[in-house]
Length: 144
Image (cartoon, rainbow, N blue to C red; front, side, top):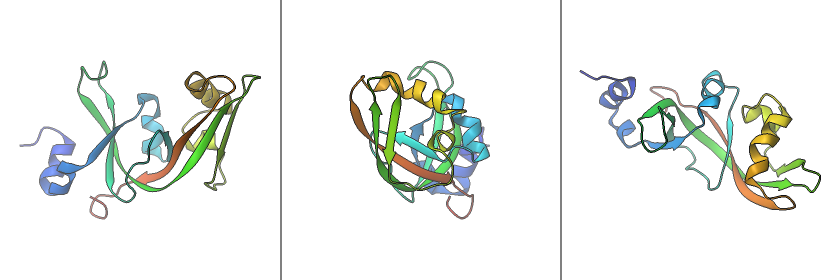
């Protein structure tokens, strides 16, 4: 008998056994599950159209078990240029169109919260190029 939901799904659908897994900060888990967070910014793009399990660590990274959050499907990706301006502000330039502001699709409560997250990752006066991916929750039966 399976001891977790993932094992039950793996038994019902063997393809889940081979699902890619990607980490997610635990602060964003509820936003992903509620559909409020449907983009992610990463160094490299993830495969489009393939199921990916988002997870976070139960404790210390690499020293604890994975806690699966949700299977997702990446729908597309764009380059995003993240600049840390000399005045301390952050600028995000990207090609994805959406009615919601980027900080909302990323799961942040405010622009200031998103800037606080990215500011330490980009040196003052510099711009980095990352990948902005749009995803949706995977549906049992249809995607899995």
